[in-house]
Image (cartoon, rainbow, N blue to C red; front, side, top):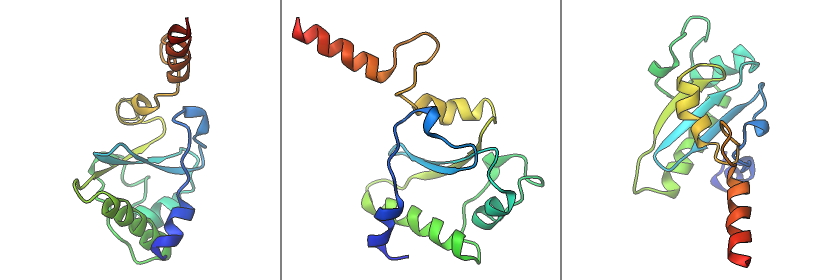
Length: 138
């Protein structure tokens, strides 16, 4: 995969849980960490090809070390990670893997970063921005 093609593969999504498909694999870059989120309906053979582990035999995803495996999917995934790291060489992002429903890690690592979601009776980011806008207009 060529670097100019990688940008075409990367798609920015709103930071809401509704944008995450249970059959998908997503990469969240917060500037310090790459979080690889695995939807619970993601085919096990896809996970095995990309991560090189079987989820049935490897229940503790916090111990997964991302490495390039001998297949095209894994090579492309690792190229994407290298490309993103090269875009900001000032910091080498750690890579963590979390599976949908894996609590409390999913809540701490992913859900807390979905700033456009409304959490526990608080305002969402969009609501907050609209409130600030209204306050500055009056």
